Length: 220
Figure 1 (cartoon, rainbow, N blue to C red):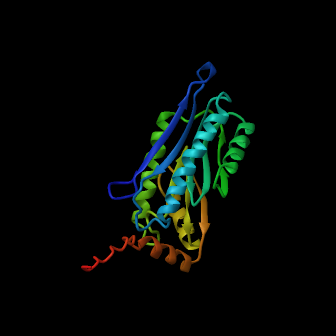
Figure 2: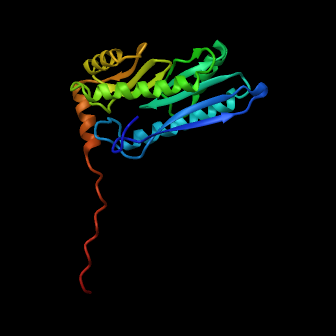
Figure 3: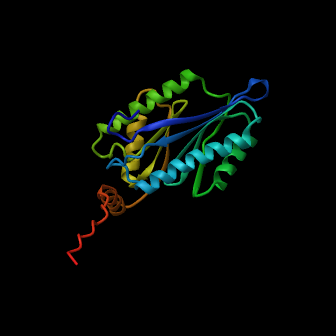
């Protein structure tokens, strides 16, 4: 979890009661309104990602209600949607991926849903702690701008999202793989040149320009 002064992350969870008491839980991650200098997304892109996460979460909740006992997490980075969690069948997995791909402004979908019963509260608590450990490892690694990579963890599998250079991606994956408790690391990166990354940093770091105040008019 990110401490005060970082981009605030809150969990948006929609739960529905289904026949035979089988819960459908679709969780989305919503970033706060502040832009941290090391996040390479502009304010507009952050807002787009928040909107996509909530929209896809709602669309999945509506379309998959009544289709079994499942848990889906939705994350978006640069309009690339990552689906993680558990669903009962391959058919439901494919349907979830298709729904996300059709959603407004989504440019790509990585469907990493697992065919399994929903994870337990204990497993999800462990995953949250594991994400924090990976984030702490990034903080101590000079080759990675610690907040430039989004970390999603499901059942001990760490998914890494972000716009990075190939070297940054390799270092991030290696550092994450060395954290105790991590079973696997999956890279969901968009790769960019060092020049493009620097351009993004400069664009995000620029302060917002205040509207010009008109000069007072003289006596008539």
